[in-house]
Length: 231
Image 1 (cartoon, one colour):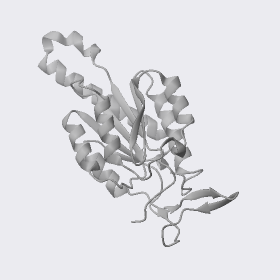
Image 2 (image 1 turned 45 degrees about the vertical axis):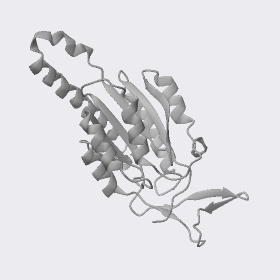
Image 3 (image 1 turned 90 degrees about the vertical axis):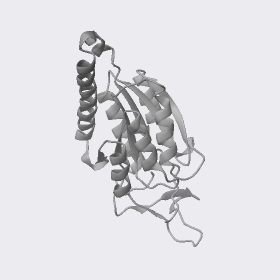
Image 4 (image 1 turned 90 degrees about the horizontal axis):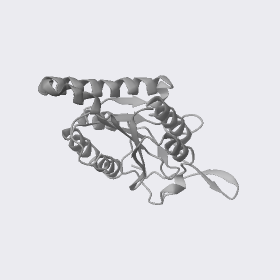
């Protein structure tokens, strides 16, 4: 995520977008998960936006020590974080470059969707990609593999499309800019609306319960350590 194929780099662009999204989704319950080779729950579902924004602002590659990208682990933890609350109106927003060293991301997205949780993906980076900066001896260097060749990281949009499709959602890209936060909000609002319509049809005698339906949003942000295995 330190790759500079987007300015200033993938990590900073993803953080800025995630913070804007949290502000745009004010009024919803939001959770936050960081992941690399594994995943951990930084913030459970809550309306504590100040802490969520602070966590995003202070996120660095040093937060996770296990190298790699485990999309499946992040999706599984996100699914578990919703608990056993039934119904729809729940979504996972996965911010990542799409490179997956663990596999099974599509399967996990499908499992989440089977429980009424829609998965959206937001790609960070470009298809052309770039090298991964590292710091050493006071000079800017790049990550190298065992053959001493510079490792390049690329956005895998194909994988992200497949994960979103398996999760019943859509795939986006950070290059869509500030408008993307509004687009996702409209997507999530439509999930809630569809859920209310289903409930109104099935429980028309209990229509007052519509307003008790929580809109659960789980924001999954990938803040990787600066490492990518070369495929």
